[in-house]
Length: 174
Image 1: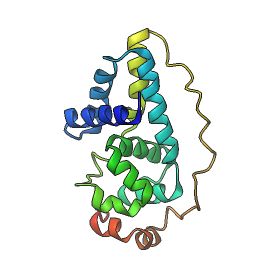
Image 2: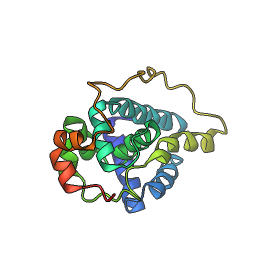
Image 3: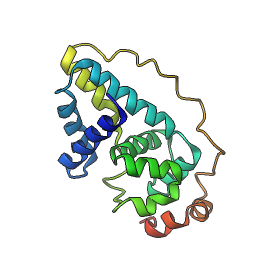
Image 4: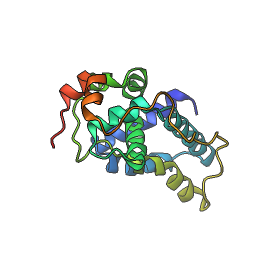
C-alpha cells in the first residue's frame, strides 16, 4: 500500500462518518476488512509512522489550545484524530501548527480532537480477518520525549502568543 492509497482510505472513512471520529473508526474497520491481511499491516505501518511524526511539542501545544486536557493520553487521541482529518490537514499542521486555524472547517471540543479509536482500527480489522493479533510492525519505538523544544502546556497565554491564529479562531469556551 502506498501513501496515496493510505490517505484515500482515511478520507473515505471520514466521509462515510460525516466527520464523527467514533463513526469514522467504525467505517475505517469496515473498509480495512475488505483488504487482505498484509494490506492491513501496511495501513497500520502508515498510520503508526504518521503518529510518530506528530509526536512534537509544538503540535502538543496547539492541541492544548483546542482541548481542555493537556495530558499525554489526550495528545495521543488528538494525533490519531489529526491523521483522520486527511493528508492536507495533517501535513499542514506538521508544517505549522498555527495553520490549523485555516485548515479546520470547525472544531467542537466535545466531538473533535479525540480519534483514539482510529488508532485501534487496523488492529481490530486484522483480528477480524485473521483471528490473531496484528504482528509487530517493525517500527522504531516512540521516543520518550516529543520532538522539538518543550513548551509550557499550562501557560495558555504563552501558547496563544505562539499560535495567535489558532487562539483567535478557536478561543476556549471555558
